[in-house]
Length: 147
Image: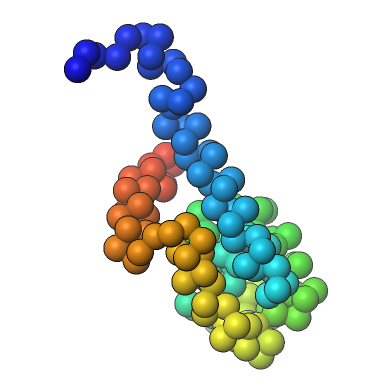
């Protein structure tokens, strides 16, 4: 096997960034029809996952859990609030802080969403160990750069 040439290194098919971007776009497309009956977009689903793990959370803590800035998370929160899934309320510990909390409707949605991961795995044709291996390989890239 020969070492790649400079031209080979610049081929689109050889780019890690291209593989990651196209994979991300395709994964979101796989989630779309699975999430539509729940009334969620993929980014909204991620917010709900974080809140199903811990609620209430401050907007800052929620954004940190999702690896996004609060200005990006805020419109997602507002939309989920308009849909009645979450509510913003004053923190009991600090009146200046707004906490994001699940409503009873948001809690109930979790029961309908519990099958989402299995359906995604089925669409991808992956087993749990295969999915975990892909996820674990990507962890090196998640948060690799301080923004």
